[in-house]
Picture 1: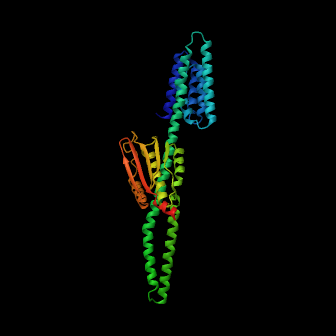
Picture 2 (picture 1 turned 60 degrees about the vertical axis):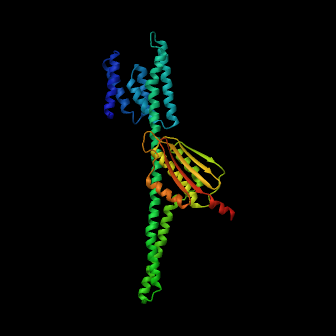
Picture 3 (picture 1 turned 45 degrees about the vertical axis):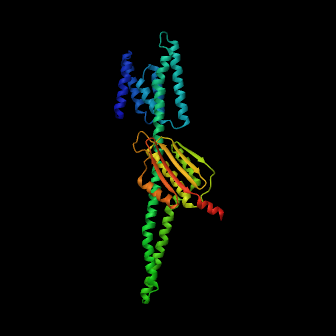
Amino acid sequence: MSRYALVAAVVVADTALLWLDGTQGWLLAAYAGAVALAMAAMNRLPFAAFLAALALAVLTGGSLALLTCTGFQAGHRISARRDLVVTAGALSAYVCVLLLAVQRSPGAEEPWISLARVVVLTALPLLVGRYVAEQREHLRRERALIAEQERLRERLRIAHDMHDSLGHLLSLVSVQAAALEVAPLPSDRQRAVRGLADTARAAAAELHEVVNALRRHDAHGLEEIDDLVARSRAAGASVTIETRGEAVPLMDPGASHAAYRVVQEGLTNAVKHASGEPITVSLDWQPDALLISVANPVSRRSPSAGGGSGSGLRGLTERVAAAGGLLRVHPGSREFRLVAMLPLVPALAGAAT
């Protein structure tokens, strides 16, 4: 339903109820205009529109559709404590006035009927609007978290591709130029070859600087997993971290970074494919290895919940393998689990020396 259609429907519905109650003439026209103005201001001034709806409800005993619409919009737009105080105060005043009117009017409806009407027409729309706003904010934060992880992943892919392809080619050019430098060539050609060799070495150095700059955001380690979990919680994810055994620092930077990436990939996949489901991160310190697992229930809303991206898991498998570990994916009908084993041998060797 369009905005104008909604305004017309509310005006017609509430005006018809007041007309059936016996109101006619200019009072009915003034009431219809007031309802239309409140509906028109609902999006830009939701709390003012809600207060106007409460005032009209007190004066006329109606405004049922207007109360519902403005209450939902006010609940949806509550973002500060001041908004909550204003809305709660207005609702409390409306309840008090309504109960006072019921007690002073002979033959009026029972007080519990008035309270039920308040709950259904005002309190319930407010709560529904607040719930919808929180769900939208939750989804927005989840999408922002997923987008940030995708940007970092693409950044690393570019860095790896540049290092593997361009770095290899520049190395070949440098080797060939160095061979030509020592070859018996005329003086003018030797100067050209030396210039070519210097240019190739400078290009290789600049390439390494660019790759290092791209990789700076990927220099996280095991000690930053708590911060990663905290950021996920701030984004709205329900994450629990469990630790077993005596923690041992991973002296190998590759293993430490692989541990961080396992948790990061698991959280990203869980948020993407099983939004709203609880996530459990487990760090189990064994005598010779660190066992990491990220588990989440399979969401009923998505048949591929927790499935993850094939390229992301392939890259993560290679990273864990490079650190001497193993990565396994356990998709089940009720739970998806990402498990990694990273050896502690490098850390023990470093401690022994």
